[in-house]
Length: 345
DNA sequence: GAATCGTGGTC
DNA sequence: TGACCAAGATT
Image (cartoon, rainbow, N blue to C red; front, side):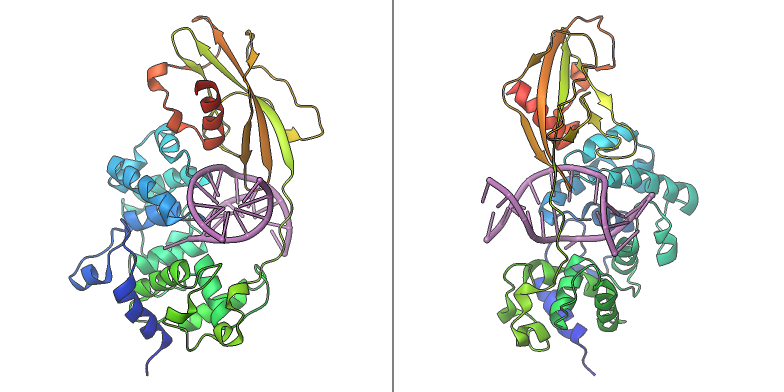
């Protein structure tokens, strides 16, 4: 009997998107197999992040650290700097922890087993299923945002997320085939990223247009439903950019946990709700001057407005200064780079 | 279950 | 221009 998955795989054989970490259906037919390290790297980077944003980062990471052993041997600061700008920095911290665990506990080879993958840092239910199916072609149910959307539409499910997750996972479980589960998982995600898109789905050219319940009901574009989000508060604070006469900058490595954890950053005040007085917290004694303008930045759950203070200090000033030739603005998370740009441009 | 945790693109 | 959105994990 012909399954729905056959229609999707047939579509995928023709329309699979080309990506640097992906082995195309044609290449697989010729015997090529994915590199589990590359699959893992791409899946971590793709968490809540678009293919367009990930591609350049993936290529830089793979060029700099071609194997998991190379990555495991890297300095923390190198990896955090290379990740800068991609966001969700806990992923980079866990990337290193995971690489070191694979070397220490798995002989430098990623395990194929779903349960073993789940125990590794930064690998949750989605990523474990994605790696075991895409890299090893084991049948696991892969449920990401694309799959949730496709399932909600296929079965015209109006229960809002995240409450609908178990229902949608059940649907996904029933549709997942025994044959080519890795290609199938990528096919559903490609479908969700291209045809079954969030805003205006192209139902007319969808390989699943006939069996889709939401298309029949005319509700595709309004699914999946989601519970309302909380409004974002506005906070403000101050950062301090001190440069020595020899060009070195006063910088700090932020605490491991919390926002921008483990990243390079300018010293500064706490960030407090607007309405409270903006705290003043210069890291050293210096002739601070306020820079014209301000930094505006939006994080996942709040808006931020930053005043930027700057000063030139003597070469014998106290504090942890990073020499000019070891400072790359691209090693800064975006909000910190914006502060640098305000001073420098 | 709810919060926390980034960023750039899009409409 | 502001809200929404993206191949989620962790606590």
